[in-house]
Every structure is written in C-alpha cells, then in structure tokens.
Image (tube, rainbow, N blue to C red; front, top):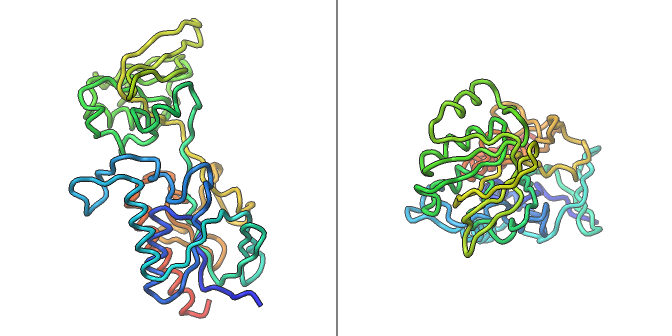
Length: 315
C-alpha cells in the first residue's frame, strides 16, 4: 500500500527549500519534487540562472545564485527532507489523501505545498543565449547593481509598470537607460509612465523592438528595429533587461486551485492558504509583485508552519 506523506512540496527554489527545512524540523518528513528542468530551468529555480546575488542576507561578499541554491538543498537534506529529481506531471485534489503523479507513479499526501515559481518571459532574440547573465537579465532589482552596469548605458524592454519601475531603478547605476517600447505609447499606469517620462536619464524609444544582442565576452550593443519606419539601429549599452512579464508554473494543477487571470495562485491575504483545504502556495507562484528570493523564503516558512498547524488541528 502506498504511504501517505504528511506533506509533499512541489518546487525547489528558496520558497520550497525553506518550507522543506521548517517541515523537516517539525518532524513532518516532507517529500520534495525538485523538478527536472521544469519550465526549462534547473532544479533550484530562477536563482540558478543568476550570477552574483548581493541582496540575500548573510553573505556580505555576495554569493553565486547556483551556490546559494546548492546550499539550501544541502540544508534541506541535512534536516531530513527526501528529494526526488522529478517533475510533477499532475495532481488530483478532488479527494483526500491528495494525489501527486510524477514519472507515472502516484504519491499520496495529507497536504501539499506548491512552490513552483514563475518563469520570466524571454524574447528569444539572436544572441540571447550567449549573453544571458553576461549583460542580459530579467530582474533589475536582482542584477542591476552589478559592476558591469555601473556608469554605462542600459536598455529595458517593455512598456508596462514593471518596465517603468525597472528603468527608474536602473538610473541609480547606469549612465542612461533606454526603454524599448514596441507600441507608440506606454501601457503603464499614468503615475508610473509620468515618472519614467520625467526622469532625465531615461530615453523612451517608441515602436522599437530589440532584435539582436551583440558583444564579445559580455553584451556591448543591442540591435533594434523600428516597426514603424522599418529601420534598424545599433545602441551601445552594457545591459539589456527584459520586463515583459512572468509565467507562473501552474499548468500541472489543471485549474484545481484558484488563480488570477495570469495564472498566479490566489492565497488568502497574509497566509499561504489556497481555496483548497490542505493545499498551500508560496514563493513566486503566488507573488506577482515582489518576486525576490528573500520574500519567497519567508512565504515558504509561512507555508510549512501552516501545514504543521493544519495537521495538528486534525486537518
């Protein structure tokens, strides 16, 4: 007979591993599915694609993203978490115990913690694979303060609130910030658009699309295309940041948990609770605003403590 676990954690970023550490220390013997290139990203999530992480507490000299996640994984194992390097294919939340299916095998659990994150959208332009993390990024807050971007021109792709916010943030470090906006106007809120348009270090290029990243060892130029005049141009810049949105990794849930229109799991304010009793969500899969390693870790703690209380109360 298949054993019913106290909790199964799906996902292995800062949220998943923090949940695992807390659940293990509460003697819940969690099982984690860390994923095998789930969403095209290695186990450990988005941080594995980041170089220096300088805003996670406890590392005064910074730490490589992949090293930070490797440390978290080792700590999860050390406190007793069982980890399977498999991607969950589906879940069945219609009755208890809940069912989790991976590689054709079904696992049972009293509770589930969803920590599958959200994958940054990429454009797939020429040179993107070569220069990703070598001048190209999808997180200005994470990477914008790196020495490579200081006192140099930087470009941001996007015209929404996130793009305006990232462009303004990057003016702290770059000598100039170009906003590459595909349309003939910003789609950001009036407040955010006004802030970007009035910033003397920001130049907004409308009807403009990035088509190729150029450089030697690191990004040095971006080829752009004006979709109105059909002309191409070259921008000298050492940074290219995408601010075109994220895709929450929730497809495997098959609409069994409530999400918003963009696929982010809806949790009750101030909690990790979803609309399904005994199913909790943490990290970027339910956070469309902050999307930081430290906030993800905090929500992972909330999810694990919620599971502990839920089980102690007799479900």
